[in-house]
Amino acid sequence: MTPHSREMLVLGLMSGTSADGIDVALVGISGLPSAPRARLKNFAAFPYPTAVREAVLRLSNGAPTTTREICQLNFRLGELFADAVLRACRRFSVPPRNISLIGSHGQTVYHQGASSAFLGARVSSTLQIGEPAIIAERSGITTIADFRPADIAAGGQGAPLVPFVDYLLYRHPRHGRMALNIGGIANVTVIPASARPQDVFAFDTGPGNMIIDALSVHFTHGRLHYDRDSRLALEGRLLPQLLKQWLAHPYFRKRPPKTAGREEFGATYVEKLLASAKRNHIRPADLIHTATAFTAASIAQAFHRFVFPKARVRELIVSGGGARNPLLIAYLCALLPSLKIIPAEALGVPGDAKEAYAFAVLAYEAWHEHANNLPSATGARHAAILGKICYARPR
View 1 (tube, one colour):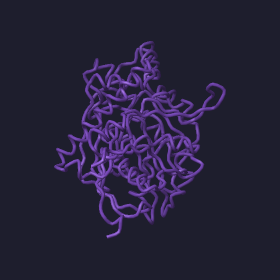
View 2: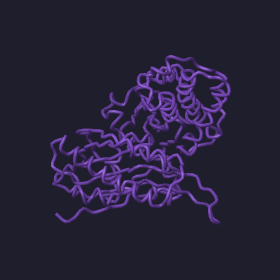
View 3: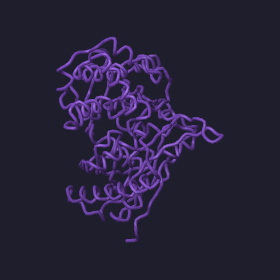
View 4: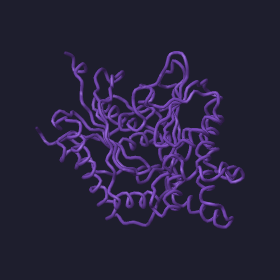
């Protein structure tokens, strides 16, 4: 038996910009790092305690904080990630000792992929918290985390990283595909027919569920965290002039590679929308409906500007929370009639599990000292090995 023929069990951990909680994917991986065979074996999601989610969102939205709070939250999240690992192992009926490796994305609280002037130099930076040393210690499993900084060090934007796995999952010999993930932010991976890794490109199209979720929380006074089944939006109507105004945001004119986050479309942005809506007597349902159309229109606009001129694409594979928003998907179908829209579940890995699955694969690659970024997606100068290793205690 060769070293790469034995299947490794790897757990992937993910918490996205919506900060709903921790996704855990159990993935069986074997084969050479250059062509791994990865199979999703199980998946679970564990919500954050309300106070923790509120703290994460507050920090992510740039509220005043202290180094003490950031430091404490890093370790508190480490405990929660470790607890999610142990709970998942019990749910999956897999003893932790049978898990070879954990890949943890952590929780992003700040991301600036494009450099800006800072203390006499131009600096890009990113910060994901959820202390991996805690995860390794509590679980007894070696943990690889903090994937984004190495890509930034190599001149990239540190994102998106999932395109590396999109390429492995979705490349097709005869027709082009796009993988669209609609989380808090929406991002797309473009995989031309018969693509080589250097042919793949990816970028954040702009807001995903972030604005819709924030408006839902605001107008229901915290009763709802998102617009389930588009119920709130379907009570309203589209306001075309408002949509046109929103689509003029300068982010949409920037050429890829590019990344977006709460810095562009978070609390400050939503506060401006709400103030404008109040001045103009816009009904809450109309605002939520138009925000839903805004996400779809910004995605379609990005495809027309930056994808269709470069690649012939036939299928759009959709994952993330936005894939369950019927009004959003209806708008996408109407705006992109040339594309066949396919839910990620139809191609093997459920959309809710895909990002956690991806970080299991990225950890496997790093463990074998194999490059696990796509410079064509992130803008890095070269391929790099992403991730920092926290070894478990000796067994």
